[in-house]
Structures are given as C-alpha cells and as structure tokens.
Image (cartoon, rainbow over all chains, first blue to last red; front, side, top):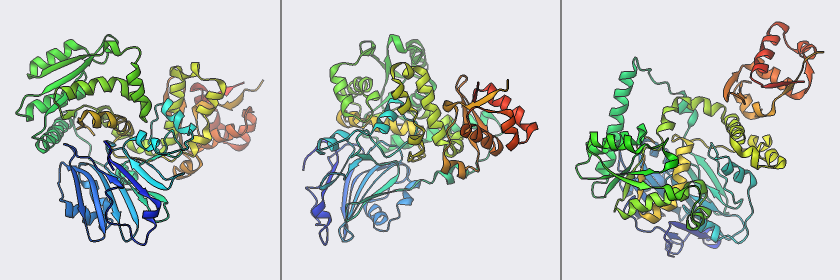
Amino acid sequence: MTNKYPFLEINRQILQRDRIPTDLSKSINIPERKFPEKFEIKGRNSLLTGYFSGFNKSPNKITLLKIFEESRWGEFKDIVADFLFIFVNFDKNEVIVLTDQSGKFPVYFSISGSDYFLASPSFQEIKNRIENTSLNIAAALDIVARQMFITKDTVVNEIKKLPPFTVLKVNKQMRYSLHPLFNPWKSASERREKYDSLENFTGDFIKLMDQIVEEKILKIDTLNIGSDISSGFDSSLISYLIGKNYAKPFVCFCGISEVTKDDTDADIVKLFAKKHGLDIKFINENNLYPFSSSEELDIAKASQNPLLSSLSLNFYRTISKSGVNIEFTGDGGDELYKSQRLEESLLYSIQEDYFYRVKALKSGLFNILTSTGVEAFMDKQSFIEKDIFHSLVSPSAFMLNQGLFELLWETNVWSFQPFT
Amino acid sequence: MNKRYSANPFSFIFVPDADLRNNSTTIVFDVNSEEILKLNPEGYKILKYIDENPQCDFDLLSRTFTKNKLSGFLGFLEKHKIVLLS
C-alpha cells in the first residue's frame, strides 16, 4: 500500500477474524517525514505506529506503547507534542486513532457504506474510496458560515472527522465510538491568580513565549526555520523571539498586497526588521486578488476548508522553495487573548454559534441566500442537535491547522504556532 | 392600544439541555450593536413566555410575572430589540 498521505484501510474481514493478523503493511501506510518523525513499535499483542514529536517531554516508543496497552491516554495532556497515533490490538480486534490538540493532524474517517474502516488526514483520499456519498447540508452551512465550534461532521455524510484529543475506537463489529480526553469544564473551573499589574502580566507572558519558542527550536535544530511576519503584534513577537534564540540565519516571510494593507504595512515590517536585525522576504500577493487561479480552486475543492487554500498555497510554495522545513507563525494569538472567555463559551456555545450566524447574515450572506436558504441557515433545531467538541486550543486555530494540512504535507513544511 | 410583544428570532435560541445545565440562564444578542447580553432565570422565563405567546401584551405578562420588575425588563428587551413590538 503506497500513498503520499498517512492512510489506514482495514478490511471488515480482517477485523472480524479471531485475531487481527500481525502483518498490516497492506492496511496501514505511514510515509517517511522529516518532521514530525515517523515511528513504529510492535508489542506482543499490539502495534503502535504514526508520528510523534514531543517538545516538553519525549517519551520513548516503549513508554508510548505501554500508555496505549493500558489505556492511559489521559497522560498525553501533560505532553506538548505533535502526534498521530494508530494503535491496533490484535487480540481485542480493536483499532484506536488519537491525535494531539492542535488539529495539525486532521483525521477523517469512514465506515459507512463500505467493507472498510478508512482513516486519513486527507479528506480527498477518503472521499475517493467511497462509492456513494451524500451532502450533509448542516455541515455545508457550517462551512459557509465559517463555523465557530468543532463538530465531528463533514460536508459528506459518510465521512466524519476526529475531534481534537479524542480517542477514536473501532471494534470488531466495525462500530466506532469517540472518547474526548479534554475536560473543558475542569479547565474552565481552575481559578488562576490575578496579576496585580499589567506590567507583571506582560513580563511573565513574554517570558513564557520565549521559553516555548526556545523549546521548539531546540527540538528541530537540524531543520531549516522560517517565520511568518506581518505588521501585527503576534507574528512580530514570534519572529523576534526566534532571532533571540536561534543562532543560524533565518528568513521572515511577509505576504503583501494592495488590498491587505490594513493587515500588513510593509513599511512597519521593514522598520521592525531593521530594529531587530531580521531578514525579510516579501511575497507579492497582488495577483491573487480578487479571484483565485483554476489550479488553486482545484486544490480548494479537494479540501475540507476551501476558504483557506488559495492564498496559503502560494505562500507555502514560496517558503518550501527557500528550503524551509519549519514555519513559525503567530496564529492563535488573538484567540489566546480571549481565552478568559473559555467558561462563557462553554456554557453558551450553541447560542454563540447561532449569533455568529446572525452576524454572517448581516455581513452579506442575507443578500445572496434565498428566503428558503435563510430559513435553513438559521434553523434552530439543527443548532440544538449539534454535537460540539471542545478543545484547549481555540476552535479557530484548530480548524485553521486542519485546513492547512494537505498544503503543508505536500510542500514538506510543518508549522509551529507557539501561541497555541 | 397596548404594546404587543414578540421575540426577535435572531436574538435568542433556547437549547433545552444547555438551559437546564445553566440553571435557566442564557445569553441574548442585540442584532444592531452585536452586543451579547446575559439573562438571569427570571429574564429567561419572561423571554420564553413571550416566545411561546407571540403578540402577548403587558396585561397577559403581568398575570404570570411580578409587575414592578416586568416593565423595566421589557424596556431592556425593547431597547436591545430582543423583543419586537406590534
């Protein structure tokens, strides 16, 4: 089995044998990758494979296998890492998939209508293998509205996606179950001491960000680093901290265009770079507005998050051509500053999601939807029935990562977002 | 002629399970200012009543809810267009 993307394809007959055969080379495809690193370990009755790169802790393969054999997945909450795990228990005829909280490894999966359990970070790869598909209208409307919260649904009814830090179990009967490991209520109720001054808070915040950037740089010392920069605070801070912690030269990439001057003022970026000795490469994005090229639209069509793909494609191709393997970004910064609202968002998530749709209508959708479209868009029952999954990483940062996966995988770049 | 109140469908959503978990509190949305406002259990009950009894007037509402608090609260709902008048 060869495929450029990680892929799992387990036949119903294999799963329903007395014992799953130990040779699963035809069922599991884990391509080599510079980062995160691929690994595989076989136990007496099980197999654990996938990708794992830890930052604050680096448990070895045997420790990882033990965690899975003893179902102690909760231990991963203390490990800052990028990972995708596939665990097969040969005796229990059970398959488990688990990813980290960031969404960098999206996992789409399907059982419906086939004799296979399929799972992959590539939505298109799964879709290509399913004969009959149907449109999930509620999920499609979620994408139109640029959904605010994470659900397990995709635009295709027969394909689901794995929520962050959630164990996906598939049993002998080819039935799946989801077990979230993050307890949002516990996190929200943990009271932290209030800072007595803004200055103390800022000092501690910068110190923490410095520590996170340094920790990540140490982990990938042999790879080439780049960073995303705009004239905003978040990416500038990250670029500055790389310069402070990284001994080798690196380039800061800055997308500029006439229509995004509010977001990125090239003159401010130049002044900032001069002050901190940063090397800037400007990427001219003028020709990407107002319409995407047909190639970009094709890529967008294949993704679950078409809103993100066209500009990002040009950006990451440029980065990749420069030989960069790891791209630091300031993504997740805005969300982090709003994290004190976590408790409120948990209590009233459906309501907030609904009001977000009202804002979308106001911002122009009302003019392009028919009255039936508006009715479907605002159907209260579909909100009440929503199954929302919460994460420590903000949903928007999680979904941004999910949307970027295919681009990053193809351009052989991996992104780091110290804010998340 | 008495004012008649109807709930603005874009300003609220009742979610039975969540509302129960939140002890009959909820948030409502001022569509114009895009402000999110919190309702306590009493406010929740009044808005729910208006939603279930469109075009109800003050007399009808005052049979169920305490009069002195009601007019102030209706003024708040009116101001933020959480209820629409007819």
